[in-house]
Image (spheres, rainbow, N blue to C red):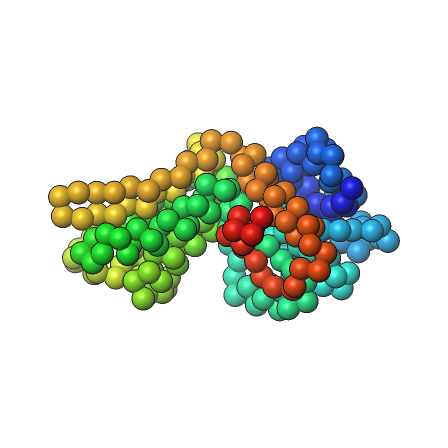
Amino acid sequence: MSSIVLVGASGRMGSQLEALIASSDDLEVVARVDAGQRLEEVVADRLVDCVIDFSVLDQVIPTLDWACERRVPVVLGTTGLEETHRAALHAAASVIPIVWAPNFSVGVNAMFAVASELVSLVGAGWDLELVDSHHRHKVDAPSGTARRLIELLAEARDATYESAARFGRQGLVGPRTEEEIGVNVLRGGSVVGTHEVHYLGEGEELVLTHRATDRAIFARGALRASRWLLGDPDRAPALYDMGDVLRYS
């Protein structure tokens, strides 16, 4: 039985994760950490095999610092990371193995693989637009998944997220450039998460869509990632993603 520390335990994802872990025969939650609590105080001297953190931005660096000190692998699902968090993530990945993903859904990670390949297949002359839809309570925009899709699409055309992303349009914006990727963000209702990439050609349109209908898909993916980390006690310190988990499971 592998021991899990669950950070963000009382959140939506934390509740899903705890329910799935409780029904498993190979994992158990040995400590639950929430906002305002310190890992070292809650966990104390318990033995820990893996940390799963789906909490808030302010918790990212404390979680990574604690995990590095204890040499415990981490599954991190917090999105909206800023440069300070990304720097801490890369620094920690030189000490411990970490799986970080903007989305732990198997379907979304298949979408990541296909999205950039389609850019190459349709070739030049096709315009790219993205629609990111989520529930009214989501605090970051675009979503981490949308940001990763934009990065992949931009890279497929030798561009960058910063140079290609065009958020909404209003007024006399002029004709679109070949490089730009239009991004439209919808927030409302109880939408779990929908991402659409529109490939717009002359006289035709191709739409690649992933629609989440059950939040449990993210929890199942995170547990798959934790089992992947736990499956090799000698796994090298590095920053892994769900693509690694799916390819090498």
